Image 1 (cartoon, rainbow, N blue to C red):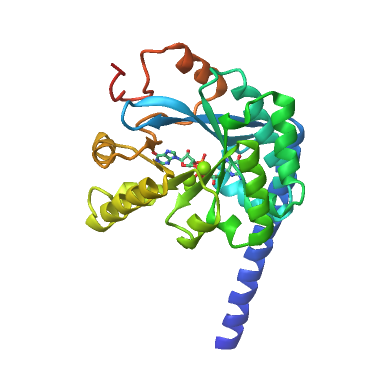
Image 2 (tube, rainbow, N blue to C red; image 1 turned 90 degrees about the vertical axis):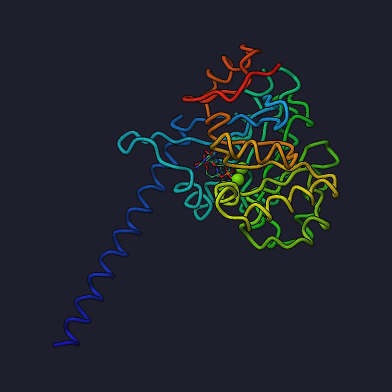
Length: 288
Ligand code: C2E
Ligand code: MG
Ligand code: MG
Ligand code: MG
């Protein structure tokens, strides 16, 4: 009896697995379709100078509106794109779109684009980035490439070579989600980072948890002594911004300072010089 119940349970899980696999396959098919039929869009989240609360540029974040399911989070479809290899054309599309759109912005605005580990495993990444810069006319110093620690554990020699190619071209490199991965400090020595982005989990906790505050403070100090810019991710409250300003954190990003915006709203934001902070509910303060 117990045996047959066990077998039943097993079949149930098997059926569930089949459904999940099936669902993934369908979603992958739809993503391929989405890429071919313009269902993808790039949104832009303001990147703000902590001190002056001034917009320095934007991070490109891909968005997918599925014809039946509505908007699907990149946290769901980026992993799928990585496993299926679709990240190669998808990543190239995001980079090209972001560089094209940012080329039309004032020439002091940075554009940050995320690169996934799978893109680094692809031999042509460096050439592809340089080609896109060339074709879109975006000056290399306005481009920032965001990578996570997942990129660094992969294949360090080739990764280093690729990163050095970017550096030589004048492109900046950020270490994204700092503190959540393997966080080997030797990475900071071995790879030529221009920026560290402190993961938002630490920013969330900062007010309640003194340990998180200590970590944030230490990373800011580390960045300062290594001459690496430090950005705080996921700033949602005035209190968090005040704490970061107090620690002289360089830059911040988060819903308080601006949500990811469709391109037309970026235009509006850039055309309104006095209002430097956009938030749907509460602006922080205006630049002097
Ligand atoms: P990320 O690169 O760390 O991007 C920041 C994520 O945090 C974005 O989520 C952004 O909307 C969200 N965020 C920003 N401020 C706040 C805040 O104050 N509070 C909260 N709760 N969240 C905030 P999103 O757009 O859903 O993207 C999730 C992740 O998907 C990104 O994390 C990045 O790893 C990946 N991703 C997005 N677009 C791309 C892309 O074009 N290429 C690649 N390879 N990955 C991408
Ligand atoms: Mg990022
Ligand atoms: Mg991040
Ligand atoms: Mg993240």
